[in-house]
Length: 359
Image 1: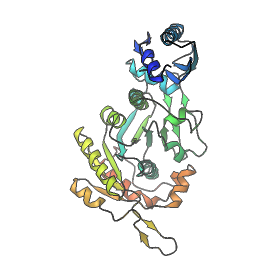
Image 2 (image 1 turned 180 degrees about the vertical axis):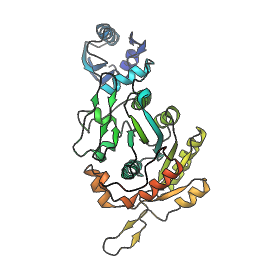
Image 3 (image 1 turned 90 degrees about the vertical axis):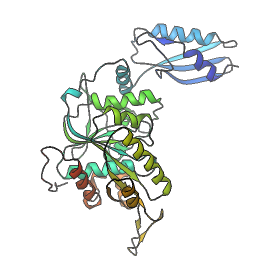
Image 4 (image 1 turned 45 degrees about the vertical axis):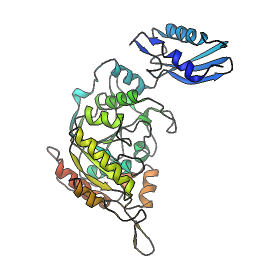
């Protein structure tokens, strides 16, 4: 009986003549199933009117039928999502149309090195705080396979608008510009099952094909780890610096040290370190409880020669606001001191006076 691995190997010899890459590498083969003497899969095309569609289908069918014992091959056709199409254009070397119209003064990445420490929360709080101080702010959600930014900012959800040549970011209640892969999907629960090159190309597209316009700060919410996606952001975008996020756990501290080493290897300034989930304040007694143990983040920041930006508590009220898409309603005192420190390190030209805006 044929195996999925065997079928994929055969399909990797089928090429898309449009860019001379194989259909496995291009991520065109979806939902591959091998059942006794029948093989079925979906071919995702950049367009259902693709000029080489019939040839690709014929070649794919012939490749699978060459396996002994395969009696039937079922091939379904689908069209790629807009972000995926644009990413393939990037692979072909086509330039983004929006980049020359954008004027972004500072690009700041928020990085954790590992998952679960609150990187997206810090991104959202920092964006909201900078906006309250009058800055023009955008958020680029670079966590392609695990996006959470739209959930925190857009209570009703949203779909992107497109002009003929560029994408237009969604605006939040207070005017923050947001781009995320989830804004392309029919359902927020839909999984994005892409390989590294496609993810990296999509992140580049979110920079060059989105009409950001004039921004003081573009915050980039990175995925966990120090692999392709993070490296793409740090090397492809004009970075002003990186904010690192950790928690009191020693495991998180170890990973932060790795991330700091990576950032310095690529020559990007580290703006500082934020510790999330530092403590919980008991509502009955007001006592601070260190649920994850004592903090050594400030000492680690000194050891790594970086600024310690501050601590964030565990706050169920903040979690509830994020779940409702109302992160911009979080109390200002929660993160304003951190944002002011970042502004001092990376000041925007023609910055507004640091006077609180009305929400």
